[in-house]
Image (cartoon, rainbow, N blue to C red; front, top):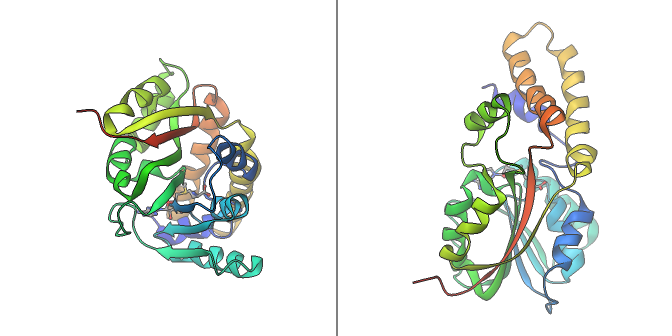
Length: 250
Ligand SMILES: C[S@@+](CC[C@H](N)C(=O)[O-])C[C@H]1O[C@@H](n2cnc3c(N)ncnc32)[C@H](O)[C@@H]1O
């Protein structure tokens, strides 16, 4: 894959995955009120959720990502908002985090746990949560069982770990959490700040790379994801899951 084209497509988009501040807000408000919680936003991208969580919680927030240009954008937002005393952009990988154990009240991950996988993420991240701390994620999920073959084949290749809501809920207790609630992200969360700007970017880069077949293949690939969502969005989407750390089942 031409990584340079991939990053040119994604550079400076409003978000790097589905979501909107109003849904980050809705999710945060489903948690009990906490006094200045310490929050880790895992796979924060350019920091949409990180900044919203900082505004909502008045607590200390760390945005963690592996891609420096996204962190640079978050850093700029932190400075513009005058929040450098309690919000930080940190480079690191979600698969080998070395924060102190039991040091966060909330772990948050919007559209990023697929990188480590739902089950592994719940298992490995748990140790960073204080007792009774909260894990909030949204994760690509089948909304109905028996999806059409075309979309099933596509997701099998891209993210074979995608499950139905009941399949995900069933995993939660055995991994040391209590399920508190869940809700699917509505379609505007996909279009307004993610797929529509992405589609405009793809269209403009098609002109620039009209004579570059490798670049066009990357653009086609990105467009395919959008076209399939347009066709099959009733079958899958990203679902917010809320859980609280408890003692694992024996
Ligand atoms: C779909 S984006 C979600 C971004 C952000 N949470 C949002 O909602 O806008 C996934 C993010 O995970 C980051 N990422 C990929 N691999 C990672 C890793 N191993 N550790 C930390 N972040 C990673 C990517 O750079 C990207 O910013």
